Length: 359
Image (cartoon, rainbow, N blue to C red; front, side, top):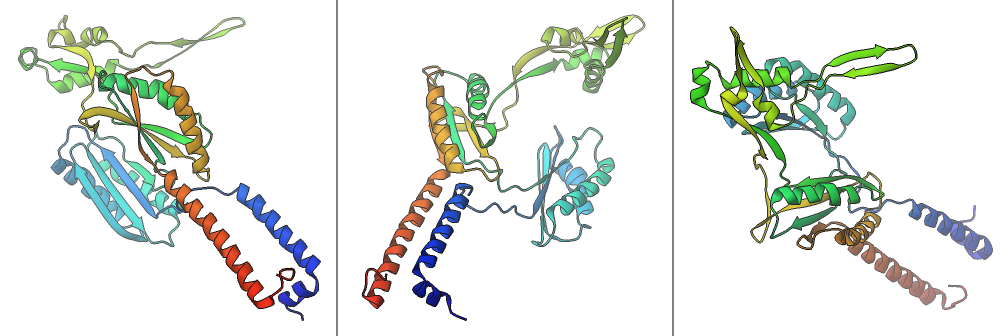
């Protein structure tokens, strides 16, 4: 049987046609190829996060982290188990062997966590189980800052203008705002007044949980129509919280205004981003799996130029990082390598054959 090289020399037209077909298929495949820095390989890691507001690290460790760790230790295929307990929350990461099916492992973790929930404190938030995702890391990070505005105003601009404009770019999975600051309803209580009415902060919390709800109210049917009845039960304004009934005893009504006051104020600052000592917020862009990160970056910069026209003059934008820069450099290196390799192949073949036509 003749070798491939012999057939190519004896039938040059066939060899040329086959090469053209290979090139055509290569071009078609290249158009569908995702462009990213590293291959999409999900690490075999599953994390369990639990929030317990107001608890210190010691309580978190004893009442949340240790019970969950004990439950996870019985799962087969775990390579290592690491945990972190801090004020207000617990994080546990379980790394599995490479051959373990992540879907099966995630289901096993959820089952174990569900079984241990009854051993956790009653007012703790439900644990969240997540699989590590190679596509969950931001590819672009944009800084938003101003020397004339506070974090509340910057957060509002980032949420309503920048985030809404950027998340409509094709290939973008989500847009996160980092370092933002939001409004929250604060309930301030006077300890002396609480003691005078024989109340505790827990009584106030129970009153809020009892009255700050919306319950289904059924519907009203007519001869040809049916209307849904909605009972407005949510408390939204400081005035409504001040009118909240905390206690009623022997005809005496104690409202929240009698023991304290409510106000709309910024929430507690947990994280903060700064540039040259000035607080700022960040816009993190996360791409969809298999999308072209370079095309997303190009569309992002075009969109930002359009958005700048609608921003106040004191708002400044700066790039935190852009991972596509490394991808562009890698592509340039690959192109240069291909050209050099092609030239070397031609030169070597010509050196042996000594004939440009045959080469």
